[in-house]
Length: 449
Image 1 (cartoon, rainbow, N blue to C red):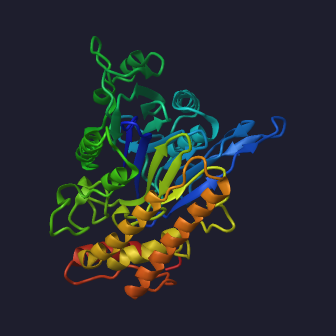
Image 2 (image 1 turned 90 degrees about the horizontal axis):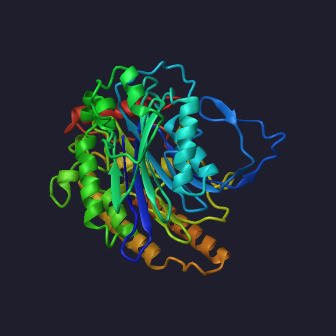
Image 3 (image 1 turned 120 degrees about the horizontal axis):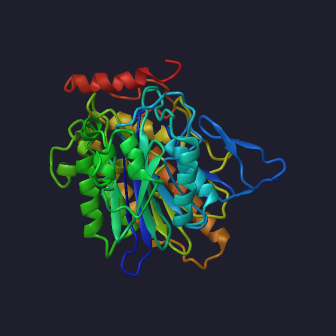
């Protein structure tokens, strides 16, 4: 489950897109820089995406992405031109063949970032690829039965679109001011673009009765899974919060929205086991709330885009770090990408702390959050100007990344959490036996256990 919102203009400030990526708790998410590349059209050949091969192109743009470690595609990202995209799983009435012979929503997202320079051309490319290849592709990690269709917010410094897809059908709507999406279709009859003969094709599929108007949401949405995802509550919350700050939205405001715990905001008695699926900062807690926010992003779509990634789960106790284009950080071999087994990557180091404090969350979280807020304030207040030398900007980004990691290691030392452990990451308690059993189950699913 996920949540994405965009504000297309914030007073005199730049457009801002923000997303929480909610995945399986053991599904480490890698933040990564992929440089621009040129390919010889005579030898470029084929590109292997998550499941299928497609034609490669002559040039791909530099991108900064956050992706599930085992996938080619990305949950969210930005390219050097200031094109930013976030995607969501949506649940529809059309079944899957489950042959894994299509593109994932994450593949479509990364392909658009690599090959498009603005939101309008990204919509055109993504829908062309969708109609050609379809999206019969498993989106799960350890859950190999998890198939879904996808929706997206696609934004550049001047405009944004909501794109919603069902199999090879699609509809798109231009954003006016601000918008948000979660795990349900939102576009009704007021779409600006759509797949060819959408209404006629829906009638052929038996989903639209003769004489009825084409309402994308009503025709295609699966009500049961959409309701179980809690998306209506979360989408309403992100939309209201983005709208309330639309004229003055700052990166810090966007980060605060992504950290929202719904009804528990500003109240005592919060615990990660209580929020269910109504929290934007999603905490896995049981069978009815099996997903966890495993990565978060905030993007300032300015003349020089500023990309803020946590690179870690649970934004409520994570640090957003700034990244820029034209630099060399977030690349192997110096940058450690996480894998299936807990290692010394940023994601797994933070996950040790995250699982280590879950049972006594409110005992430890306030101190972690206070230190985090002070560091993020420093990062934001000292953000380099657009005309500063590239070397100075890269040095600043690296310093922020290192200081965030240093703070994490200091916190783990104070909490007496083993930085090398590959097992028993969660500290259980008899006070919450079912919650403890649930999280110990995820520890038990780690490879090599």
